[in-house]
Length: 212
Image 1: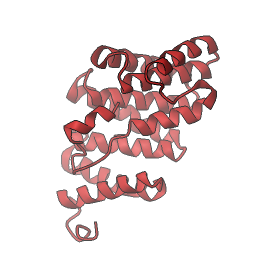
Image 2: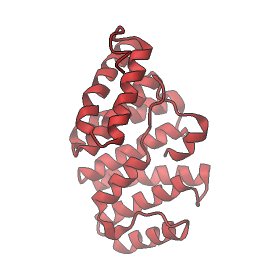
Image 3: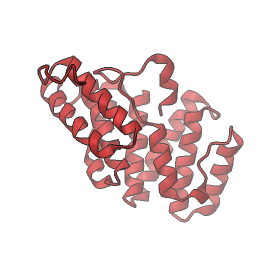
Image 4: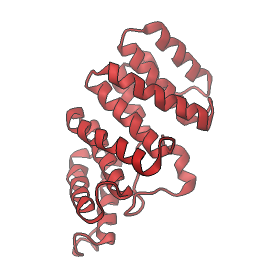
């Protein structure tokens, strides 16, 4: 980043370095320092590439997730609501990135107490993961646990327990209803985070299996 700092603000190398620095700060849980970096990258992405460019959409996703990690779901909501239809329009319904964005929007609604909005999004993401990845894939198990957390928050304890037991039976995913919905949802969000390795924020193919 120190080497790229002096480059023009719309230079790809500078933007890539800024994004990677923001991600590194996120890994250290320094969300307050990462936030302005994501915001600067997004301003340039929108101006240079437009609202529907993959780099712009991924930056929107990352910025929304940073707001979530900082406990500001109301700031995350308009970003998450922009990201999901953007990915759907450019990549289609079943691509992994709109599914991640769907999970993120569900998480934001859950954090705001809007369980009636969170549940259908989480269920749609779960069904898509079951169809594309199978019932025992880690990503599917995370989705099962997310639905369980929402049902628990809504007071449907029995349905939440059954789903969580299903997840636990398949490789013992560490999201349990007894943990508390907020903590479990936060863990799920961290497990779905996109990490930037280049200006376009696209991971190497072998790493994509880690993403919801």
